[in-house]
Length: 198
Length: 101
Image 1 (cartoon, rainbow over the protein chains, first blue to last red):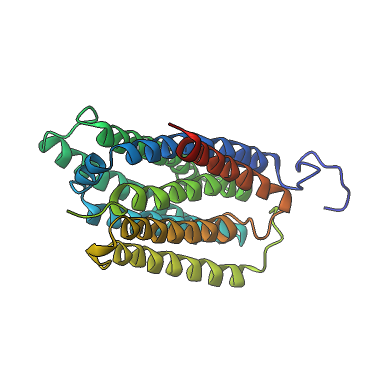
Image 2 (tube, each protein chain N blue to C red; image 1 turned 135 degrees about the horizontal axis):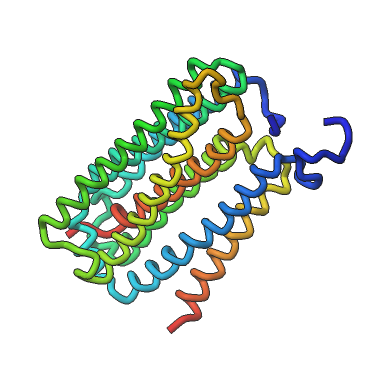
């Protein structure tokens, strides 16, 4: 970009408007999850016994599997953007498709986890730990679904005659997707791992 | 393309390295959460578990922010959108836990 003035880029940060808007949204998203983490820490400190007992009921191996799935999906997302920028549409479609598959995989594992909990008569109203467990992982799962909707749209469009050639849009969605991975990076140790085992 | 990141071959290498590090650190988080701290350490042992778990999560999150989300290559101005909310997170957590009831 030669001149400082352009409609496509925001003049201070020199990033496309959509990307800047996504970062502003993500800043608000960090605060959204901050509220949950802050409340969780306070309640944990005053209910240590209940929290460590309840956390022991969680299946950390399924959560570990989901962590691997999400990290894998972040990688495939980054690779799909890279390939679209290079004009390699075949690999772009392959990696975007894999990212969507990982999203489905994550949701399937989450469903297994939830249904096992319900089978053991553990519900969001069972106690304050499980309220937070279902609230935080539930909101996170909603974010995964929200990311998969535009991703599927782009994927389908990529197979049309016109194809899908908007690297900045995919990059903007990628930012959101990596953020969803990032939230899970914190949810995993905080909910599943940091409590002393009994 | 907005970023001034290195050429795509270099980026490919970075992505693979970061993803491998994220997988490795995830395994390390699980290992660190096992019962290796002597029971006699009591509350200090729990604190150590939490500190290690969160420290690894912070390292992982910076890898995602800087490489996957291109903070390393984009304008530094963008970093404010990460660091301001994180600062507010610490203020909130400190206020609730240290100054709170």
